[in-house]
Amino acid sequence: MEIIIQNDDLDNLAKNAKDLPEEVLGVSIEQLSQAISVLVEYKRTFEYNLIKKMEDDQATKMKFQNHSGAMKTATLVKGSMNAVKDAFDLYKQSGFDPGEIGDMVFKPKWSKAKEAAKLGRAKSDIINKIFYEGKKFIKIVESL
Image 1 (cartoon, one colour):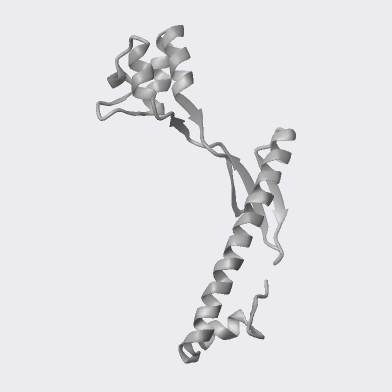
Image 2: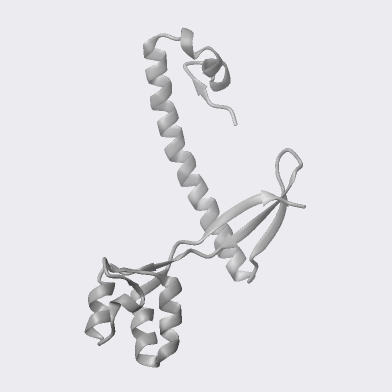
């Protein structure tokens, strides 16, 4: 990827950064900040579409060859389980002890909650209201 700042490429500018005037350094930082924002949005768009395609295909892994020829594997990773903000009150109002699924500085933990959910339907129902799945993401590693 080539990024040009004030008619010079980024690699050249970075190699000579200590010799650049403050104005060029300032412009470079501003341009890079804008480019980073755009790249983050592009990555988010590509990741969303890859997740959607993998879910539609019921796939959890996808192999591909990157631009330099290395084999890579993209893995669809489930998001971690998170608790809603009013989890303590919700669990307590349902007649259960919040300490059962979290510490008394109430911080519900999925590992405890999924065990407590096995203790009856009412408890399972309220735990399903408290926890939600976090954002899915793609993890890319070297393929074997």
